[in-house]
Length: 56
Image (cartoon, rainbow, N blue to C red; front, top):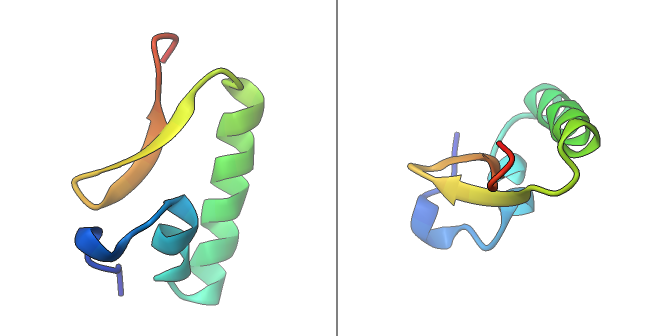
């Protein structure tokens, strides 16, 4: 179950709301994005995480 957006402090809170197997996938995705686009910042919008930044 995804946490309510109003309770989310950061992306870690968002990821923590999923089952362990989904958390592994989200952490892998997060690392991949950070490696490919290191100058972006993380954001939560519409109760979903994702990268943001001028280069995206």
